[in-house]
Structures are given as structure tokens and as C-alpha cells.
Amino acid sequence: MSNTPHTLGEEFPGQLDAIHALKVSDSRFAKLLLDYDEVNDKIHRAETRLDAVSEEAERALRMTRLAIKDAIAEALAKAT
Image (tube, one colour):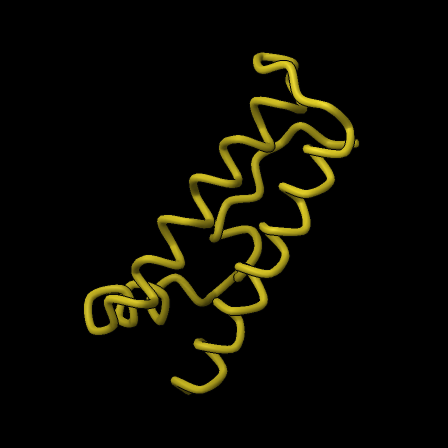
């Protein structure tokens, strides 16, 4: 298990300009980015044992991050 944060730049290489453009033009997309960062930070804190989280809760956070990442990918695909 990695405790390296999954930054959007790593998850969507080469798409930071498109992410920024959507962020400023689409408030729903901007909210997705905030949600992703929030969940990603919680996962990172759990993995590094800064916060005590059950395995089940950590797994649920990962599933949430994946769902948000899928929504981001879908929005990016529609925008191009």
C-alpha cells in the first residue's frame, strides 16, 4: 500500500490545462476537484497513520476517491 498522495497531475498526466479550464468554467467540476483533494488528503493521513481509521473506513474512502476520479475523467472526456 502506497502512502504517496494521488495528485491530479499524476492521475491525469498532460491534462492539467484542461482541468484548470474546466475548473474556472464549471462550478460542478470545481466542486469535484475540491472533493477529490479532501478525500485524497484523508486517505493519505490514514495511510501514514496520522489519523486512526479502520480498514473498512479507509477502503470506503478509496472507493469514494475512485468514484470522484471517474467523474473527473468523464468530464474531461466530454470537454475534449
